Length: 366
Image (cartoon, helix red, strand yellow):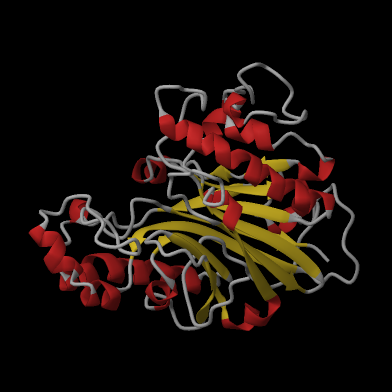
């Protein structure tokens, strides 16, 4: 469990109003209608300013010539802000923190309820950029510069609990040499409904093409995370829990789905037991095998306006919604759309992050 108070940042937004319906699942008893406003954002090396100062980060990195060197496991590499021409504490404040604060304030104005974030050093870093009315709910606890967290509106703080999914980092596997991110689960209990969110930041550098590419060792690492992810999905499916998975998948799931790529290189059915993760060719077809039936999921489509697509050229951040949660949705509360669901791309200044925000509002029916 990881509970942290006061506050951090965002990835999914939960909005408490009234309304939600769709065919599929049996409604839960004594459920009141409400809306879930959801967002996801990778904050690209958001760090705590005082920690950078205390470690003499700026001076020591300058002496190293702004190379990828990491001065300490919980500090960004010395090249982390070079693309934005940030080489001093005042520049970091002006170019990095101020745009993030502005973007988060806009989300707060949209009545975001839960913020899921990736690539943040610690809860203090997130707390310093949160708008009034939000608190850090929980955070992964690894000594690292790329942790995951949730921030929530103050009134929701007593309605959530959190759990780190340590296995997703592979750090418990014997002989692992890869520093991967843990997952972070948040359970919201509101108005008679329980919804589980899993915030992820999966292995990078294998965004497209077959995971079985022997020339790219990063793909083999990502393959090892798939059984852990599928285990989490199936546990919640067996318990009939509505769930979402969101965050930085570091994988173009839209391409996998639109091209109907097979799950495994040998053509075997992904519904059968996976003996060797290295046989997985594509991530989403493997984890979305509908076994058990309640594990079936829908990939939320990214809103496709051309100007925003041009400002958000890399599509590695995704939201995935379980069919059990879809069964609680009200088409009338979801901007008139039932299938597929859409998330809005929100561009941000490039100095704030190299990732756009994903934002979606869902209505939950009584």
